[in-house]
Length: 210
Ligand code: DC
Image 1 (cartoon, rainbow, N blue to C red):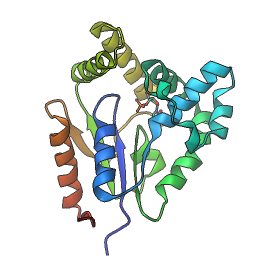
Image 2 (cartoon, rainbow, N blue to C red; image 1 turned 135 degrees about the vertical axis):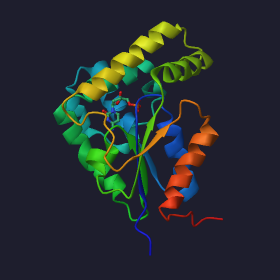
Image 3 (cartoon, rainbow, N blue to C red; image 1 turned 60 degrees about the vertical axis):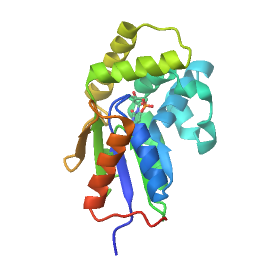
């Protein structure tokens, strides 16, 4: 019998981790949690209401993650700021741990899944891409959504967020020692998914679906 499949996907913004995680979840029929949305919801709500981020985090539930504004870059910057607050991280821990403990298994993506949330996950993938490539992806995505911005600004904001996420004391963005490193700089989404799936299959996990 193979172990319960928990897949931990970590990496910086626009590395492709979210797309990979979503496709892996669909392939294996597993529930998926984009943990960035939790931090985005905390950052966004505390900005709107003035509530302390740790208090927002303590009361957050799955029903609070649907607002389209959470996907925007302002929410991303706020998320990165509140993500550096240890009490916020502590208050979001239980929800994430419970999600990852479901009998069916789970896929979670974020910054500290392989190191803090699911240190025993049998599959850990650390997704990267060069800063230039990630900024290009984000710039094109924003323009496609009709957001008026310029590439140098996107690049500068991304570099700032990377720095904050990597240098913070509380659960910084870092690869777990047993993570598979996947650099998607020269890959499209299909190639990145195929590489991640091949790694998981090498570990002996197979989809039980059709
Ligand atoms: O993955 P994302 O771009 O939606 O994440 C937004 C921010 O949230 C990211 O810059 C840092 C924070 N975050 C975190 O600190 N820990 C996580 N597990 C996920 C996101």
